[in-house]
Length: 568
Ligand code: X5A
Ligand code: ZN
Image 1: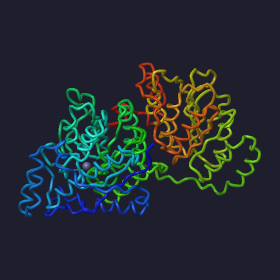
Image 2 (image 1 turned 120 degrees about the vertical axis):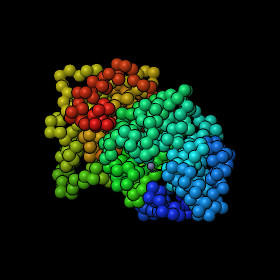
Image 3 (image 1 turned 90 degrees about the vertical axis):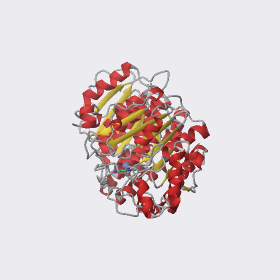
Image 4 (image 1 turned 90 degrees about the horizontal axis):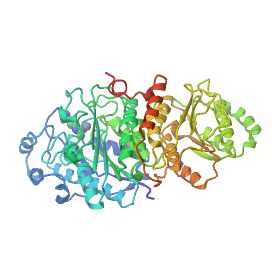
């Protein structure tokens, strides 16, 4: 399986710049690129990536998406003087030409294609390209919104042609609607295009009716265009996560892309003058982490907008760090508890509990933050889990999330809220009533394929993100009702929480299960365990009932349009 993260950047793309005064365009500055790259160097992320050089895209490649007229106009600007450049620029909505614009735009497309090649050839698993000018507003025959050529759209066409791909997902998390990309793939069912964007009932640029949620694609492409217009500014981390849980990811898992390309604009981040949103840089680590679970990890992230230099460069770093497989940071700025004072007590406890084998030694390393995660095998998983939970709470952890799969002999006391137990089992367990912190989830995996992702996205993750655990314990006991791929998904997606701290306690002696859990915990991309299938009506209802039951306590479950997305 491919590993490694490509980074593509070339200083030459900073030579495209605005030569006259224009308040609409003056935010798209060369420093967007250079400051992002500097910040990556500062965090020592550049040296951890595989450097891939840029190249110029060929005319043929540009013509995959654009008309020859458009190409010729762009080409002709290379030798123009300032006055002529200004005049041609005036033919477009929010665009400026410089003598180097054409060259930079060809490098931007070329950089994007280099990244696709690096990922598709298996040279790397994923990567990011820092490019200017951006691409997603650009259309077959027009520059628009700072974009000359549609880098991402050309990349998708190129990947279809060169690698025979049948399903590509484009996720456009830029705060503007990538109407250019939507137009290009509107009738194409092989490209699923998702975009969220500031809309404000069509008041916000580009102010198009076709940016609304009812533009779902045309002809054969119907159903393969998803718009999520925000009718208010100020959207934050939880709004973005809710959209991923309840809108994008269910569709994406079902679509089962062979490649994911991100139109990665960071003007949807806090501080951006265009977006006016509140999402912090950490959220991009989470979004990236989710998308890494698709297409066997094949993920190409291409810069689009982002105009607050600090917010932009921090968000770029969060994205690249996550692509490299680093633990996903906590989404709030809350500090971890100071633990040093509790150390003596731990040692004492440790002795009395030594009979529980290696589990406590592993847990101890996690609690002391020496390691991020670990796996313990146990002849009685539920006993070991109960001990681990009690131990963690006594150690000082405030919120421990426990997901237990299979029969549980001991159900830990969850009354003080320091433990949240989600118990996944095949049959109703009588005698234990559900409560805010003890949630039984009766689920038997479908024989036809893995439908558990719908429960993970529709229920478990929203509850978990609402709880904000500082540790996750996942127990796998006897008579588990989930297959290996379902369990794998659980482990990978729960790594987005508790700074990726996870203790796995597995009763099952099955070597396959141990191996795949280990793979999930070291961040290997999803092996091919079979397909994801949508849930049956009965299962979908079950999730809905659970959501209704718990959404007052766990707010991230709220996903009706009224409460969850628009909050009108
Ligand atoms: C790539 C991008 C924004 C254009 C805004 C024009 N373009 N008002 O973010
Ligand atoms: Zn934008």
